[in-house]
Image (tube, rainbow, N blue to C red; front, top):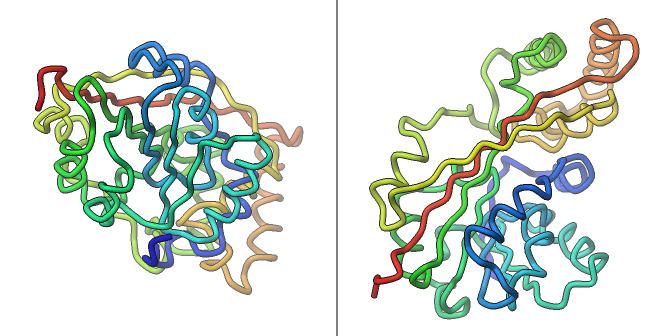
Length: 271
């Protein structure tokens, strides 16, 4: 494994990430299988794999899968998930997009690269440039994100955000730093890269949350982790439970999800 640290953004979140991140719908997997004619051949690179939310459902459609993440705790959780799924073609590697020049020889030609809720943490232009030399003609990249509860415009999500801000301050955190919105959209970067022009797909569906699922999800994030809350965690959690039940005593909360799936491809005539 590569000996590169992922910093402190997701320190201590992996247990919750594996259990409370909701994953990707089968419709997205079917979309990628159709667009890229996935037939069990070739190599998938899942970059910023977390605990395997994309690598695992896509693994049956490839001969080899490399799942890369900078956080050792995430990979530890992914090991268990891969074993539970009975997958023999998945290799887990500790590393990041900065390690791609070193990893390229080990990985070989790539049929597809997926980045689920991770691309915004990378040096995006450098990553696209490096991947352009690693992805085979006709192959491509996928950037998928359904946002976060911080930005959802519903009564209960606004109440969740306000509770976080009462305990952690007004700015959205990213570990010990503040979250910064990228100055340029992913689509624009993909369009002017070797993978352009990109395609944008939006998958819409509804999720239902319980109070415990909301709390577990928040502990999986870089803006409301246990590391950030420290000894305030018990009081924060009690406050959040009371706040959510005040919004809806049923303890059931609906989210209308818009999953953005951005796709770029290398021309079949590329050398």
